[in-house]
Each structure stands twice: as structure tokens, then as C-alpha cells.
Image (cartoon, rainbow, N blue to C red; front, top):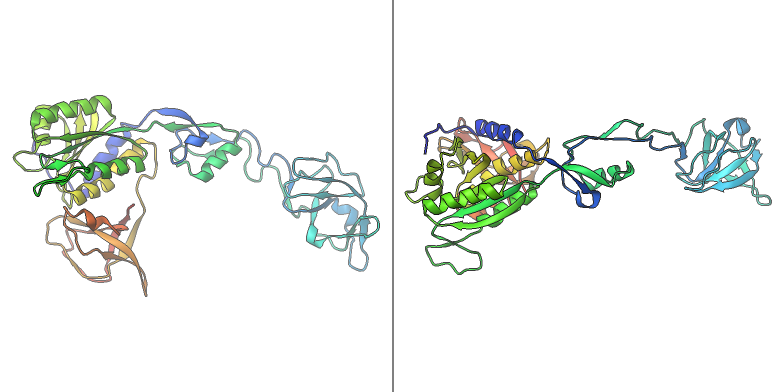
Length: 410
């Protein structure tokens, strides 16, 4: 395995996200009802004005302002009514000197220029004509054509996530399908003679394979399609065969375990024999120091640590945003905030420490409360965590109340 300098967190992120830009997924067209959560791959513009005509913002009565301009409570103006206007049932022209009932969303007929809402209207008891005692200004309660958007306006931009609201907007544009990035196929391999399947009863020296389940969930949450290729035993030849098959089947390869300094770590030897080009071979962070990133037969490769918490943290910080960018997301990261700590912390590791923490409310506002157990093998340390709070290497002692960079997770 070639020797590379340990990268900082920022350098590692930059290298990985730069690589994502060169492996973007090709577009595909899918129906709207299958597009929730996908990323739009092409701009959507309006093909017509919306609304397409002036319409009423209220249930009420439309009329010409000039026909009742002088109306006062002591000198009302009475206007005869013509056939009403319900939504979807237009009246082309309002006769001069008349008014018409109009429902919310009803098209304003030619000639009308104001709507008197129904709560302010009075009808004569005998003829049912409209009695106008006062009149709002011209244009009141009228939604003008093109108020929402004009023909040719950019409505949804490439890179936007297709939320329920975005899908509704696409439907309002007359789209039955949208262009999205194809989901990347992500092949997952787990390493270790000590690893058994979740349904098996482990011996004292064995551990159930929870990493594959976690990584599959990360892949799905980022928009990818996971393909679990199973457990690779501590045999370099088996690792070479498995990595080759993963490169054949997938767009991205992810391994868990087998990349550290152990004499039996199979992926270390396999990568060396395969002459796999590596950009990252270790990061100055805790947990996650063994993280490896490169290419196998041209396919992006992530080598994640085998310890469960370490594997999950590196997947959150590097794999998930990488996959989101492959899917076309322009905002692949979760929210970032500077929050005060609830207690003093020490960092003597010589690396940036990413602590699992929860978001809590204090008398002075929100704060980050580091969880009690931070060992890299403790999967339970992730339960209840809302944040990864970064304790930088150049600040070995942080006091309660000091601000730290926090990345929201989950």
C-alpha cells in the first residue's frame, strides 16, 4: 500500500467532493409519482402564465368600480345581478351597470375591475340585487394573470430536491414526468473472519454484521441503490475477487473494515495488488482515521473503518454527501451550526475529534451536549445523537459555553 500523508478533514472532504463532480449520474425520466426525494436534473420553466387569467381571491361579487364609485352607507347603489361565476364556469363579459356573484378562483369577466367580498355585501330581500354601501379600490381581491409566474419564467432549478411541494409545482406546469439523475448503484462489502450475519448467534469472539445495515440505510438516504455483496473473509485473494465484482456491478464501492494496520486486513493487500489509485489513506480525525478513498477499475471506492461508530461517522461525513452530489444535489450537506457546549472537553488525540452530541435547550438558547460514551466501537453511542460536534485539534481544552462547529445528522 503506498504511503500517503494523513489529510485534514477539510482536505479529505475537498478531494472526495471534487471526485463526485467527475462521476455524476446520467439523467433519466421518471413519472412524478415516483420522483419524491429525487434531485431535478433539468430546469423547469413555465409554459404559460399562472394564473392564466385574472381571478377572484374571495367569494363575493364582481363589478365595475365606476358603476358604484359614489356608493355610501347613506346613499347606496343597487346593481342587478347576472348569472353567477363559479370556479371553472366563466362569464365572458359583465354587462355594464350589473354585478355578478363570483367564487374564489372564478375568472374575472371583461369589464369587472373590483370584487366586493361576500361578508361586506347586502342583497335586496325582494329582487336579490346587490346593494353597494361602500367600495374598495380598483383591483381589490383580484389575483392578476401571471402573478405567480410568467410564461418562460424559471420555476424549478436543476439540483433542487423534489419535495411534495416541488412535485405539485411540476404538476401545475403540466409535467407528468421529470428528468432526474439515475440512482447510483453502491456495492457494499464487509470484512472480517469474526463477522457473522445478524440472524446468527455469535461466539464470544464474533460480532454481528450491523455495518452493512447501517451503510445500506446511508446509501438509500442519499438517493442511491445499495447492493450488499456480503462478508469478505480475511483473505486477500477473496478480497480482490470481491472488489472486482463490485466494480463490475456498481457505480460506487464501499467496504467496511479490513483497511487498518492489522496483519490480516484483506483490503489493504488487495488494493496494493490491484494497483488501485488512492487519494486518501488516513485522515486526521477521530473516529475515522483509517478512512481510504480512491478508485477501483475507475469506480469510486470508500474504505470505511470496521468499528461500528467509526464506520457510521465516516459514512455520514463523507459517503452520504458524496452520493448526494452524484445524484445532482447542490446542497449535499446537512445543516451546520455554531453551538455552545454544555460542559468542558479535552482533546489530546492530535486529531480533530467529532463527538456524538444531542441538541438541548438551555436558559440561554440551544446548545450541544456531548454524549457520555464516544468509543469508536460503541454503536449505541449514536443513539440519541442529533449532532457531530467538532473539537478541533488546535484547541485541546474547550470550556462549557465555548462555540463549536456542529453538523446535524440523521
